[in-house]
Length: 110
Image (cartoon, rainbow, N blue to C red; front, side, top):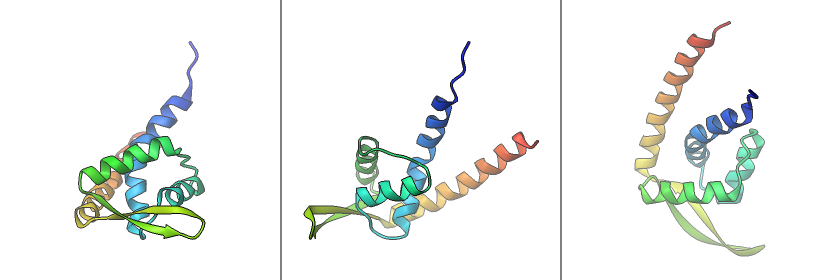
């Protein structure tokens, strides 16, 4: 039997992606390319095909809103922003994340 850790790593990244996107947007409005770049800087590589459906779902649940802004280097850009509900939801996610990290760390202490 061959064990491939890449699948496990991908599932873990996918699980925290929503938290990371909301955290990025808590620092200010951003368009998808900026979000992808910030995720790449932290080694959370995400492709547009993964990001766009997630942004749409977050918008449809009321956590994000967006506006169109003209660009000097191409077509207008869609800038995403956290709503008040999104800010509150992010705070709840951050608490849940800290609880999870603490529980996992207690389990895997060497």
